[in-house]
Length: 113
Image (cartoon, rainbow, N blue to C red):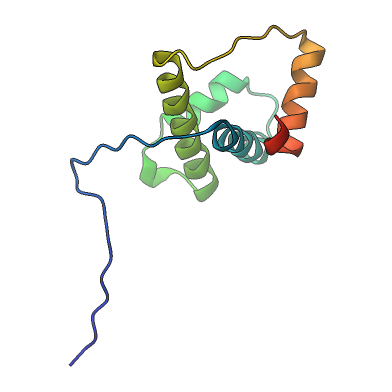
């Protein structure tokens, strides 16, 4: 008799609410930036246009890196949507130089962002 293996999948209509802490959020954002930097090599196209070109594709037409970027972008977007709804953001103003330094710091070490 052939041995079987059980596998779990979400139900088609399943919607989950997942609790996320700041560290996970920063790691997720860092992952988005990391994958984006690998994808965005053609600097002749504007960033917004480039992102639209990826997100307008069918999932099946995307390569693995584009899929990773898209999924991570959706994840971060949902985290930010829920944070906004739950008044969980702290707003801070940065100069362009300070913002660049903060993003580089997060990219280099997401646990200290």
